[in-house]
Image (tube, rainbow, N blue to C red; front, top):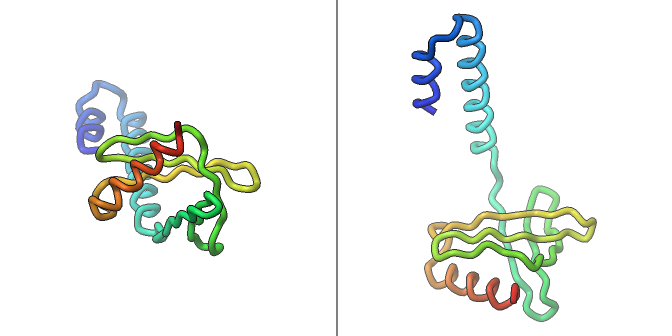
Length: 115
């Protein structure tokens, strides 16, 4: 973000477009910080008996089904779910949000289910 401010400050553009652009970047930054502060803790549970997932949220627990395409690396997992209503939910899980063993188990589970 600092590089964007510096770039806008030194670019040879008119004063008012420059002020409007800097104001837009500031509004975007404020929006990102507001969303980050108001985020809610979510819990994701897997039930191996019926191969279903549950996600906690503001409305309570939501039943989800795992989609066939997942993004799995050693440090990052992006899980794609489908709700009963047909919408797609994705969750990004980095290695630092859970224990190394649990993250490894999640990666193995997702890779086994996607093939």
